[in-house]
Each structure stands twice: as structure tokens, then as C-alpha cells.
Image (cartoon, one colour):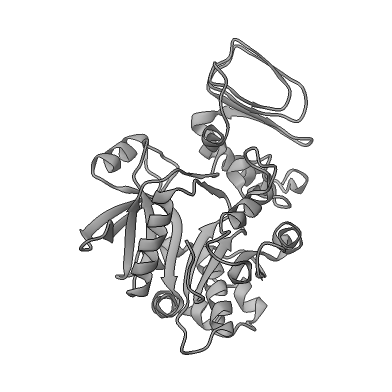
Length: 349
């Protein structure tokens, strides 16, 4: 699927991946880690998916200042521009930074479209995915802030959900009625029953419409980044807020494409179940491990491990730390990082 010359791809690659500690650290967070069997980082894999979709010179990566060197090393040959946030301020500021750069290089008569992906997701590029992008771009050109929502395949508590409103004529697209953040298991089951969609975090919009909405709902961000030569100190003092909370939940222009394709978010270790094939006992084992009497475990170790008689655990080791938790409690790994930050254990972060 080729796009017009006024379409740019933006890849968000500045997160810290706290729920994937200890594999993901501040210096090498999850988007720079390898995933699956390709041997490439998630950032590289994301950019390679754009081959034949958006040319390299119109691919933009947004990362943090302290990750710029690593991002450049991994992705410099796969994109046209890498932008660095002076300090991570959430997806609202990161996307505004990309939009400001695109505005600076395009003529005033041009209204470019931004297709925004996350570097820590995996996507199967099938017909369903490309159809969703086509519809999202059409919605963007009609003045909508388009999202891509997926029909849930399970009651997932780690994802956000989108409630559909009125359907657009002739399209598998809808007004956005509301956003629901990570629910309980019972809440997720209820959302699925009522036809809610998973929020993939894939955004598509025209730069002009996005900037207009940004000026309405997040004027300080819009004002700070109105000039691509922005003040770094002012940027660092911006509110740390997601684009969902800061803009999309308030805007009357949000729309969602209902899609069906294979997609996953590397938010927690549970995502390994989508990326790697389990053995006959349901165990996923990366590294050298002796498994005896085990079932449905996730094991990722950098040294020999003997694991006996356990079920439903995630066990991860690095040269600095060991994690053992119930896989269903994988969301709580971020609590470990919060504790390490509170106790100033920078050596483990």
C-alpha cells in the first residue's frame, strides 16, 4: 500500500518499559530490545514494516534525549529523522514534537497526514491491517482524528477500550463515544459483550486538524512547540500527559476504524505468549533451563535455571536482577521499579 507524498509515518520510541523490568531498563528499554525470532530490536522491526508503505525519508522516530544515540545506531538507516525529547513528557508532547517538525518542512498549502505507530507493538501485515490504514487515512482527510480499534479476542485487563458511537455510512468506522482504561477482568468481559474495541494506539490524522485540536485542548504544548526551534527548558516543564487523556477523550473529532488483524502490545511479559511458541506443557523458555513438572510458565534467563513443579509463573533473570511473579500479575512489575526509584537503586534501573 503506497501513500501520497504528503503522508508521514511517526514512530513513538521513547518509553521506559517499566512493566518489563529487569529486561527493560532506562538505558535499554523494551523498544530497543530484540523480540521474536528476527534478532532485531522492536524499533527496527516497526520501521521495516513500513517498507512499501512510507519511504525512509518520510519516517520520523521520536525518542528521549538520553536514548537518541542508541536510536540513531539502530534506526538511522531506516528513517529520515530522529527527534529527541529533552525530557519524556508523554505521548501528547511527543506527537506534537513530530507534528511541529512536519509543519516546518512542508509548505503552507500542504496538509500532510501523520500515521502514528508505537515501537513496542507487533503487527501482522495482512489485508485486514492495510484496510484499516486505508480507512483511517480517509477519515483523517475528512477532518477526523482517526484511531484503529481491534475486535477483542479475550478479556484483556492490560489494554484500553473504545466504545463505539454512530457508524459512518459505508465504512467499518464509527464516532468515538468514550474511552475506557485498563478494566478488571469482569469489566473487560462486559466491554467485549457490549462491542467495545481494543485501543491499539495507532493514530492517523492531518497535521492541520491535529494542531487545531492541540491548540484547543493542550494550548501550552501547542504554544511551546509552535516553533521547531523550541525552548528545551519549557519543554521539560510541560505537563506529562498521554494523547488519549489530554486530547482524544475531549475532542469531538475522534473516530475509530473497527479492524481485525493480529496485533500485540509488549506491555508486560504476558505478551511473550503472542510472540513465542510454547512447548507441550505450555511453557515458553528462552535461555537454558531444566523444566520438570511445570506448566504454563514464561522463562527468560541469562544463566542455567532449574525450575520444578510450578505453574503460571514468569521467571526472568539478568546479570543484575531476578524477577519471579505470577504471569497474571505481570502488570504489577512496575511496582518494583517504583520501589527501586524510591530507594534510589539506580544500579538496578
